[in-house]
Length: 190
Image 1 (spheres, rainbow, N blue to C red):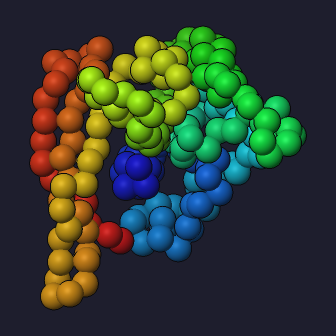
Image 2 (cartoon, one colour; image 1 turned 30 degrees about the vertical axis):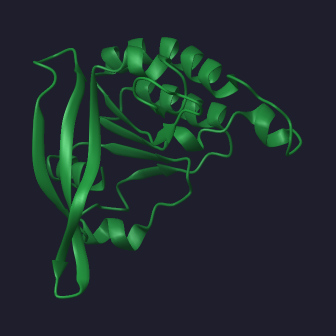
């Protein structure tokens, strides 16, 4: 996604990075060609705050590319303010569902591309079918125009040093072109 932001910036596009994980490394981003001074970066405290920022940026019409890193880190306010052992079943899913209903229309009107990075988790007790799932419920799966499954298939080494990853990219969903295509590529580290 940082390379995508760098490419968009080279074309004069305005980009935003919603860093819910608080893990953006400006030095590494600069190495990949990102103009850090021109990049709008937000490190929100809660999932609601992150999604409100996304919505406000989309409504402004000033942003061309927006990246949310990551869905798993969009923690609802109630969970942050609650006790450690409290159960918050479906809270993140409800928050995302409500946000996506608002956000999709605003993204379409402003012609803004929004990329949500997500992680794969394992469902407990699944005997048949795929035990893998993504965080945040079904709203993102439903509202997404394109969903990509990006997996590391091996390491690229120079001597003993790992310098990149062999990667398989599978189109899981595509509303704008043919789905289920697959490609193998290399992703090199900075």
